[in-house]
Length: 108
Image 1 (cartoon, rainbow, N blue to C red):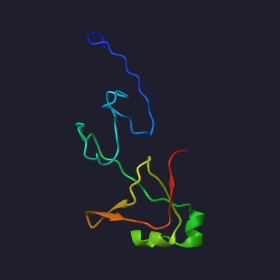
Image 2: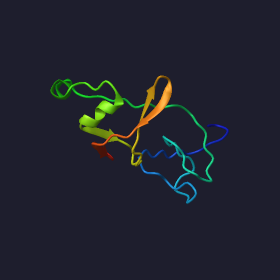
Image 3: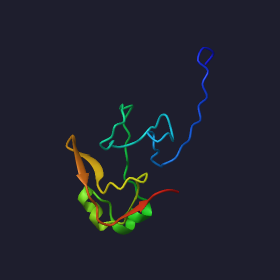
Image 4: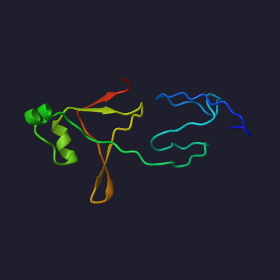
């Protein structure tokens, strides 16, 4: 910082900012970058987990396969992305499952 003094204003949120429009100089995004004139560099991997309370599982049973989620009430936090598929890995391969009874939470 001594040789190159800069000021960093860090804003955290789940909105997609318009970098080309001047809203930000740098953005960190999760997920796939749609066709865009922006330059992207992968900086890591993230994951998601499927969780349920012990009481819910006692009442409704424990799903063993992604397809079992069809008979469960699911809530997914998706950071304002409208991706309908849930990513899983099966036998070492990516597997995308589209659940039916999903509720989406945009923010808390």
